[in-house]
Length: 347
Image 1: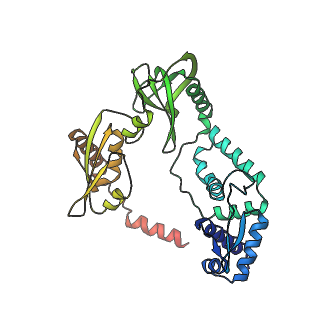
Image 2 (image 1 turned 180 degrees about the vertical axis):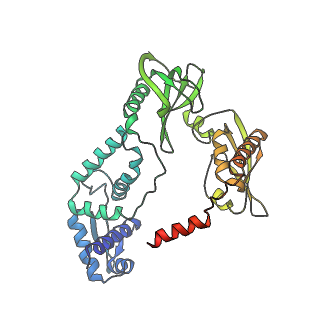
Image 3 (image 1 turned 90 degrees about the vertical axis):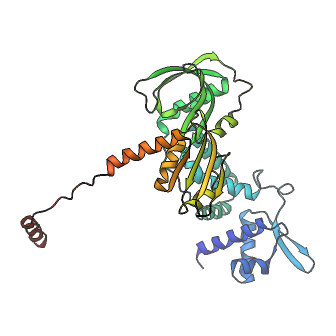
């Protein structure tokens, strides 16, 4: 029997025991993993030798196998087996933070876990991890901004202002600002600073990679007691904040399912129509990011309100028509040249 098949079967047994509060009998486990009861007995013994907290007790005329109560029989580290496996699988998700102090700290944590667990248990966990594939969205390389992230973290913890030289995405020149950082945000693969901008006298969001220069000052600050960061972020469609707007968008029936299966915004309301389309409504702070979201769906999305957003989408569509409206003529090859090329290929 292949070693991989054995590990796969043992992992299924562990998952079956985790999912059952009562535990499982050997015949039940044999049916789950589709093998002989003698094989299940050997697998249970192997799991015990590997360090997994597997126990057995009699229930009437039947022997029931289950996982030990971690409160009475702890693992080598104070985590339950489901918590341990979830944390171990979390390594796949940590890749987007590579190049930051957060990634290094997680790698250190995983190394400590590995040093405490038996080799056989680690082998099974490594094998089980192969069943989880994490598709990561495009992300920026964070290593060049590692020092900035550490400075921002220090500023937030010590409540100290930052001296920032910043250029916005559509800005034409650098601006110097004093920023009171409230939160370091990680959104769609990028880091942002949320804080009070002394230049604009308002709460703003700054993309970390658009900061030209960053200094930690000795000037301290106190965050307003009335400020609720989580509520502030909830109203945005992404991370950037703007004037409040009530948006209403019609999505065609071809993509209605994609719209209804997710929560795109905490305030959203999605109503189905008789023709299969849906109407999406939400109260958002700023329309710049929701504009890009609407454009993602192409002609299958129509902004009904506000009028200003509808006009912006219309302008974008008109610009796209200028780009794609006139097809470039195909380059024609003269018959004589075509014959020469054919002869060259045949040779």
